Length: 331
Ligand code: SF4
Ligand SMILES: [Zn+2]
Image 1 (cartoon, rainbow, N blue to C red):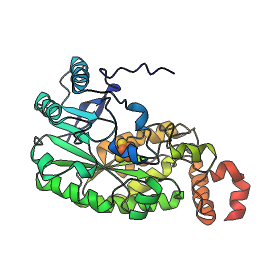
Image 2: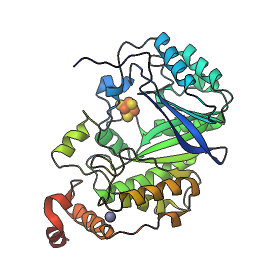
Image 3: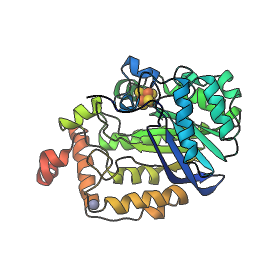
Image 4: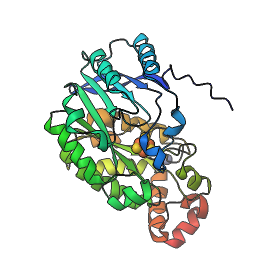
């Protein structure tokens, strides 16, 4: 099929709420079309479908017209997030003069956020950053084995710690992303992994964003999911991570689940998903775990699935595969 996407238009643009300067503000989110993440050439990460958002013929001029389109829809939001399909600080993806242009264009904003892999976070790139910048780091997990075998990230947790510490030493904001339920981890192991990863990230992060795995097209995780060998995490598991971290970290802990409530995204029984996701939205701003007081009968099923998943050692959809009665027999 012919790709109708033009390199001179951004992949997506929308507005949402977020925090800047300790206040809830409007944010403009722009997804730029770029030539994609350098790591994709090495196979990419097991859950990442960003290659679908990348093209291979994007020039600096194209990026400039994408920026112009974004500016035509910009209404002075204090927070601007510029996502690429990889690393904003990679010269091969975003040429240095274009980066400078973005810094100048949004120099009046309270916050300008973008993502980068740690290998592009060097003394040289960091010293060029204006003070309103927050760099998002995709740590995913602080367990080296999970990062290597399950996520196939291509760097070690210590690389992220080095990058985060360097950014903080220059007073640059850091938002660290964690992946809730990387493939091959059971539901309970995924909760433990997210909690210990957040404790690791707290030393160099202003914010820790817990991203529940969302099954994206064309990924290795999608193949597992289609065979019934992977169930995206329950929303209850995300609640559990928030509860366990409460009072234990100084960073703000947040989550903006993509695909929440769908079979591909973080979900509960279907009945309580909307109210549980709304509770997360409230918690993002309040940081008050009493905002997570949602109840539904499926919380018992979640516990059952966790117990049987732990005994069987599987991240699969045990509820779908075995049903309630068998799960009870297993535990
Ligand atoms: S998750 Fe990030 S680092 Fe991994 S392939 Fe995707 S864009 Fe690249
Ligand atoms: Zn429910």
